[in-house]
Image 1: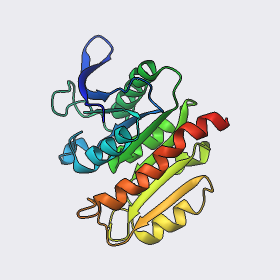
Image 2: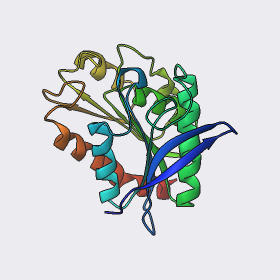
Image 3: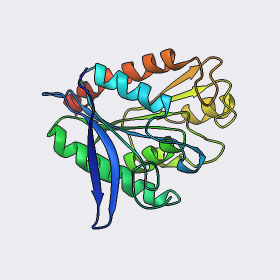
Length: 214
């Protein structure tokens, strides 16, 4: 597996975000990974974020995880969602340059899933989205109406922020969404990182084929 290297994302003249890039010589695809809510301890070293990165990199994909503005070594302050969308877009732009013409995708966990959905659904470059622990009880994910990009949604059956009934009902509305409900998993996927990784791996392996089919 290709080791990650520290990189800096520049947003305008004044804002810099810390990030880590893993870039194989010939990546099959590239995935940006968005972390949980900055105001509740979320950062790019979150175990779920790290698990997604490890799985994707292990399959030969380029990965870019980063800290939203105001987190860790990133400058600025929390942007209430709007600023974080700009951060994710900058990450996608950076990764797109790094991987050339390889398929591009975005993944996110919790708050990061909401940001990934908002950004990914309006970006024509997307070969896929992975939304993990989407807090359906807190945020509107209706933007999925506007995309047909193959999407993975993973929820835990014991997640109070993504109630099992809501998860099943929501995902059933979108035939291009692959819904994986992990039995007994809470919002943090404690003890459930292995099945989470399996779900992400199956999604990631399809990304090169999705671009080729277009």
